[in-house]
Image (tube, rainbow, N blue to C red; front, side, top):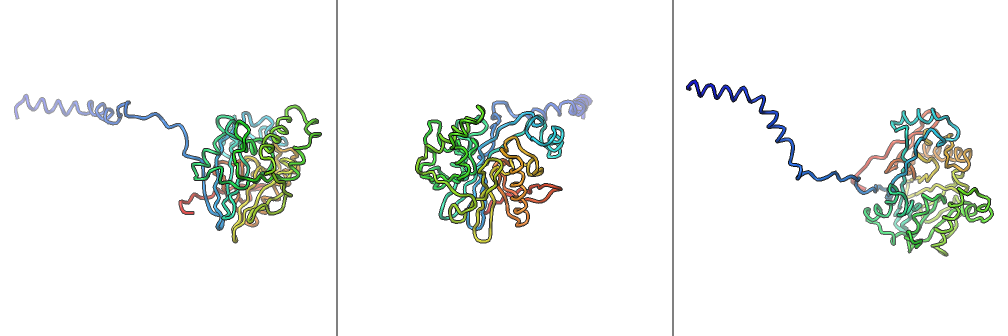
Length: 329
């Protein structure tokens, strides 16, 4: 090898450590034109599992954000107690997400929708039930029964479209009698504070659109074969949870018996949304004592999607063990 050739070879070896990072960086970065923008949204929000022979589909409607949870979210706990609990749950303390989960149960004889969500005209983060229902393979026209737990707007406003027309045209709507008696009482509406007037008026709009298809039920009885209601008063005067039974298997739909999981872990805390805090706390304990004793899974309206969970005792309260996803039904 000539001296010139050796110098060239040695120079190339010496330069290699300097050139390699730039070369590798160039290879690692694809051309910007080939990189799509981030998608910016989740997969369709539906989750399906079996309870005996019944098929259960949980639909995500989205969420609202409550800022400053230390200020008034819990009526009978200090702000620091609330923030401490949120920290223990690995949740942010400046704001909390309040999710919405609507359940459809196919019993084999009926296709039952439990509550109806916020409606498509709600806030941008909470209006996705119908979209996720269709993504799950269910059409609104297939629903034959709607079981209503209570009349708060996030549970009934999805009964109609923005023009006030029924979305579930082939369904009968089952409403708890004591809830109906409260919200449809003109005297109560006239005495309610101005901030509460909208709830009375919304109930009249939503149920009025269904006319004679609305039926009232006495809490504690069977609504359709395999589905019964459970009186869990306190959150509202006629609030109900539901039991789904198929063979030896059961599922509890707890509706708003707890609100977000904070109130499962602290069942004696009174939510700002509970109309009778003491009664709501008593209903919570009674329902979840039963669920733990009988090892029944639960779907709750305001737990993180997909919500389906088993319940265990935790200190003086309860906690949840989320149900595992399975591709097989």
